Every structure is written in C-alpha cells, then in structure tokens.
Picture 1: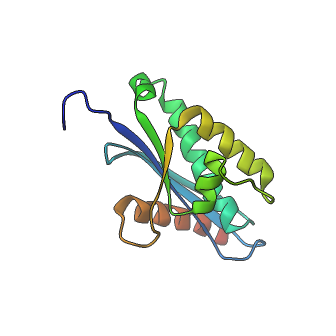
Picture 2: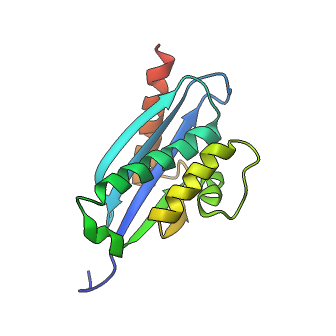
Length: 149
C-alpha cells in the first residue's frame, strides 16, 4: 500500500427471505477495513419481504459502524462504502430512487447512509465474492433462527 493512500471501510450487507411476506426473513453484515473483516452480525424477523431484509442488513451494519467510530475516530477521514448485491437497497440508501413501499425503513437507511457513508458499490450475488457469500450465510442463519420458533 502506498503511504498516505486512502483506506476504505466497507459495510457488506445481505438479506434473505422465503419469498413470502408472511414468513421469516434474515439479515447479515460484515464490516471490513481494507478487505479484512473486523466485525459481523446477523438477525431477522418473523415476517417480511426480501427488500425489508436487505435494507435492514444495511441499517444494522451502518448502525454498528456508527458505534465503532468512537473507538476508531480516524475512520471518519476514510472512504466508507456500503456494499450490497441489492440495487434496491443501494438506490434507497443514496436517494437515487424513492420507495413507494417500506418507506419508513428506506428513510431510516437514507438518513444513516447520508450521515456515515461516502459511497456505494454493487456486487453480483452468489458470484463467489467472499464477503458477500459470508453475508448471505449470516442472513440465512438469521432467517433460520425465526424458522425454528
């Protein structure tokens, strides 16, 4: 790495659902610095759509990053990029599209993104991208927690 080069913090996120809004869903995120995973988490809910799961993963990841900024204050000077395989989530986050469903969740995501993130990056889902695959597994784990209840 070149001395003085900008570092990057990435919030990788993914959601998982059954495809039925009355069934369980899950979310997962990984926060990485310069490609190295630092922290991850997952969770879910008893009923919701895939779009809700995808946006919740981003909300949870950005919220965790916000708490971490006290511990890593130099991250404020770095690129903080939201990474997802969901264009819906990314366009809601950066405000390039307006939600007509899930408006409250989209507004929450947009507010967090505008405060903490500097950009977005889209990755193709299920394409072997290591951190995206890890988020997918975490999201499925979150969904499974509710499936077993």
